[in-house]
Image (tube, rainbow, N blue to C red):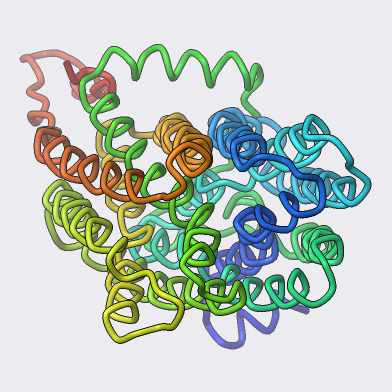
Amino acid sequence: MLNSVIASLRIHRAWSVAAVTFVTIIGAAAFASLPGLLIDPLQGEFDWSRGAIGFAVSVNLALYGLTAPFAAALMDRFGIRRVVAVALTVIAAGSALTVVMTEPWQMVLYWGVLVGLGSGSMALAFAATVTNRWFAERRGLVTGILTAAGASGQLLFLPLLSWLVEDHGWRPAAITVALSALAVVPFVWLLLRDHPADVGLAAYGAKEFTPKPAPVPGAARRAVTVLLRAARTGPFWLLAGTFAICGASTNGLVKTHFVPAAHDDGMAVTTAASLLAVIGVFDVIGTIASGWFTDRFDTRRLLAVYYALRGVSLLFLPMLLAPSVELPMIFFIVFYGLDWVATVPPTIALCREHYGDDSAIVFGWVLASHQVGAAIVAFAGGVARDVFGSYDVVWYASGALCAVAALLALVIRARPLPPAPVAEPGADPAAGLAAVSPFAEK
C-alpha cells in the first residue's frame, strides 16, 4: 500500500525512509528533554546534591556517545530496523524504572546506564547511516533535517514535560518519556527499511543500482578497528576536539543546566523550559540551513563561524538571566538556537570526506567525544553550582572553549582529490583504479 502511494506520487522511497527516521528521532527525543527538569524536584524530594544528579546525567551523556560507534556497526550487522527497535524499548524500560528509585545509584543505573545505552543507539550515527545508505545527493540537506528532528522533539515535549513536572510531579513525566519511545516502535518495524536494495531501488541521486552488502560480522571489533585507524590521522582528533566542545556548550551546559540556572534567578520553571523549547524551534531552522550551506560552502569555515558565534552568545548569557523574559534574552534564544546543532552537518560531511565508507562509524566516535564533553560539563556544572552558588563561571568557561573550537576547525585540512590513475602500456586498465585508502591522511 505504502509503496503504491509513493510510486503514484513519483517520490523516491528514500524520502519516505527519511520521514520515518525523522518521526523516530522525534519520538525518542523526549528522553533528552527531561534531565534539566528533574534537578530541582529530585533535590527537593530526596535532598540529593546537584552534583549527584549531574553525575547520573553525565553517565547518560557519556554512554550516549560511547554507544554510538558500536550502534553504527551493529546496524551494518543486524540492520537499522532491529537495532533502533531494541534501542527504543531499552529507553522506555530505563525511563519507566526511574519512578521507583529512591537512591542516587538507582538513577545512575536506570537513567544513566539504560537510557544512555538506548539513546546512544538512537544517536546521530543513526541519521548518518540512513543518509549514507539512501542518499547519493542532497546529503547535507537530509543530514540537517534529521539532525533537526531532535530539536523538533524537544519543542514538542519540553512544554508538556515541564507542565507535568510542575503540576503533577516528575514521575508522570518519566512515564510519558517511556510511552513516547514505545509508541514509535511500530513505525520503525513496519515502515523503516535498511537499504534501497530491499525495495529494488538505487539510492536517491545514484546513477546505478547498488546491491545490498552482506552483513558485516564482528560489529564491536570493526568499531574498535575503525577507531584505531582513524586515531592515526590528524583530522579525527581535530573533529573530536571541536565536537567535544560542541557537546560541552550544548547538551552538557544549556540543555542540562539552563532551566535550574534560570530558576536560580527567579524565573518560573515552565517559562525557562518554554525558552529552551523555543531554542528548539530556531535550531530546526538553523540546522536545515546549515545542511544547505554544507552542500555549497567550505565546511571548515562554517564550523569556525558557528563555534565563534556560539562562544560570544554564551559570554553574554549570565547578564541576561532574570525573573522575567526581556528582549535581550529573546535575542539570545533566537541567536543561540540557530547555532545549537548547526555544527552537525559540516562535521558529518568532513567525516565522509576523510573516511569514506567508514564515516558513519568514525562519526560515531566523534559523537562519543561530543558526549564525553557534555558529560564532563553536566557534572562540573552541578558541582560548580554547589560550590560557588552560581553557574556564571561555567558560562564563561564554555564561551572561551568555543573560541578554541573555532580555531581548531580552521586547522582541519581539506582532503585532496586522488590523482587520476595512469595505466602503464600493456597493463590492465582496471589495475590503476584501486581505491585510495580514506585513512591515508597524516
